[in-house]
Length: 453
Ligand SMILES: Cc1cc2nc3c(=O)[nH]c(=O)nc-3n(C[C@H](O)[C@H](O)[C@H](O)COP(=O)(O)OP(=O)(O)OC[C@H]3O[C@@H](n4cnc5c(N)ncnc54)[C@H](O)[C@@H]3O)c2cc1C
Image 1 (cartoon, rainbow, N blue to C red):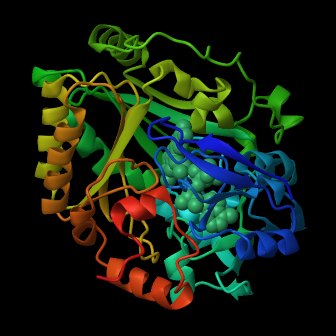
Image 2 (image 1 turned 120 degrees about the horizontal axis):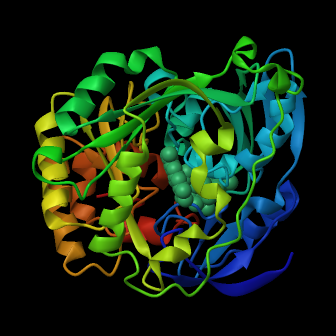
């Protein structure tokens, strides 16, 4: 197994750290890698789409899990797939869609691995209906710090610590997933505009239950009466009879297109209030006031950014922060205050989405809670950003909410226990499972995720 020392970052390209990168290609190689990882420990990594430092380990080892990439068995009658943890959701879609099956949950990119999806217990536009990714996992193989491979099933403490456990309970080697049957690879999408934040929240609350998938793009540079204006896109997999005759001949085709990669040296500051303000204005005006039943491809509906490889370079060398938080139903005023503060602060954010979550998931460090989640991208070099986000964190914690660890690169550790009430259970299980602290990451060190307090 080859090993090289490389600089590793998350998708936001902030806080790089150097680590020994090892790429196991079998269970035996993964076991050997755990045995030999050294005193600074190791962390598994998928496709590096976590924005912050979750899949980094300064001075230690990082396991690149994309070498474990086999789809092992597909039960096309029962609708399950068993695959290695390094298989991407993109690959699963390529193989499963022609058979009439879709992944149960997809985030805003297909370029994530099954291991990363379980490690962060990711959510999609269907969280209000389907919950997070790990709800659809029927079993997983976990390589723990003692070198053993355990089969872990839902409803057990080890499963609940691993779902959303950010790679800190061990290396997920393989998993079995329940799939969603679909008749076509097209989506039927309704689009509408909301004039302000209250209008947006009222529309989502009143009619989200009609849709399997729901999300709103929100213009965080709009101010005054237009604060929180938004474009809602909601929909479901199109039934066969909604397709035009031409598309019915090959209804399960999946061939996403790709544009040229974003250039590597875009100037710093290209995304400023003026350029982003112009973009947001255009995006809002371009959306129809109301349109129903538009047919869109899976990539256009779920993963528009995947069409531009390395789009994260548009933020320049300084990179960017994605800030994502959730607050419970009943805490809408906190959400309103934060949206107003971000708008008043004039953060140049063009990627901002608001979504209503369904029930919380069993994972002890899973992010979703029944309520609202807002995610926004902000250039990391924005003056005063650290202090501003610290203040937002306090507002979120005071509202009984939390920030998403898969997006985080800067949260203060003292707020974590309030945000994640099962943190003490997580630390206790880890202390028993991994007393030498073999599994550790930059995120875990920064937030004391592994320490018993
Ligand atoms: C454009 C974009 C859109 C996104 N949209 C969403 C969204 O809608 N919803 C959402 O929830 N997230 C979203 N994300 C975040 C992304 O889904 C998660 O960060 C996911 O974990 C990334 O998977 P990965 O394979 O790249 O894992 P990495 O980023 O490499 O790692 C993420 C975490 O998983 C752990 N991990 C990885 N592989 C394993 C393994 N084999 N065993 C154990 N632990 C492992 C790592 O240790 C780390 O803690 C988005 C990211 C991007 C870039």
